[in-house]
Length: 355
Image 1 (cartoon, rainbow, N blue to C red):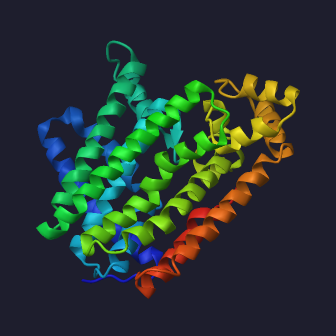
Image 2: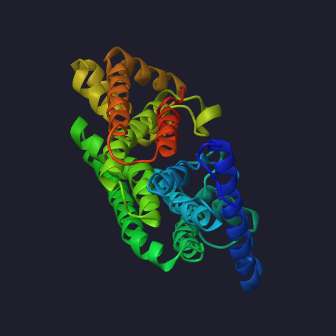
C-alpha cells in the first residue's frame, strides 16, 4: 500500500503509529522471553512511545522523502518512523537531566521506576534505581531506532545514502543536549548562545535532519533547500516550546505550570528578559530561576517580569520572522508541489501552538 501527503497529517500519523506499534510489540516479546523482570521495561517503553506524541520528526522525514521523489510505501514508513525512537531516547534522558517529575501528564520514566522500587520493597536507593533504569531505557530506545531502520525493508542503496545523515542527526542531538546542560550551569545571559542551544538541542534534529534523512532515503536531492526551510523553522519550533515552558497550560503541555522556570532553563526568552529588565527585576529573576520549590506566586512574579520586559513579545516576533524565512525557502529548489503544500501546513502546526 502506498501513502500520500495529500491525504493529510492524520492518516500519515496513523500509518507511523501502526509501524511503531508493530515494531515495539515484536521487540517487547523478546524482552519478555529474557525474564519477567523485564516486563515493566517492555510496558513502560510501549506506553511512553504510543500513549501520545505528535510524530513531528517522522512526518518531516516523510515530507523530505516525497519532496525528493520518493513514493511512500510500508518500508519507507517504517524507516521514517524509526526517528521517533531517537526522540524517545532524548525525552527520557532529558527528564533525568532536568529532574522532571512528569512527561505528557504521566510520571517520567525515572519517577516511574523509582516508584516500582518502592512498591516492590527493593534494596538500596529508589531514586538511584529510577535514574539508572531511565538511562538504560533511553539507551534501549536509541538501539531500537537503529534496529527499526535496518529492519524497515528499504533498499541497501537507500540505507547507504541515509545512514550518514542519521548518524549526524544523533551526534548533533547529543551535542545540543550537552550545550543545554552547560548553558544552565554557566547561567548564560546571551541570546546568541541560547539560540545556538535551541538550534542544536531541538531545531536541527526536529526538522532539518529528518528532512535530510527522508530525502536521502529517496534520492538525496534538495538537501540545501531543506536546510534553508528547516533551520529557521526548527529554531521557531523550539522558541515556541520555550514560551510554552513558561506560560503553557499544564493540561496541554503535560508539564507542571512554569516547569522551565523551576528547572532554570537558560532559553532565549530568559536571556531577553535579563537583557531588558531593570536591576531589581534582574536580581529577582536570578534569585528565583532554578529554585526547585518555586511556588505559583513566584512563577507568576517571574511571568510578570518576563512580560513587562518585552521578552515574550520579542520571542513571538522572532518566531514570526523565522517562520517567514522558512516559508520563503520553499519558493526555490525542486521540492515537489505536494511536499511544499505539506511543509507549509507543518510550519503552522509547529509554530502556532497556543499557551
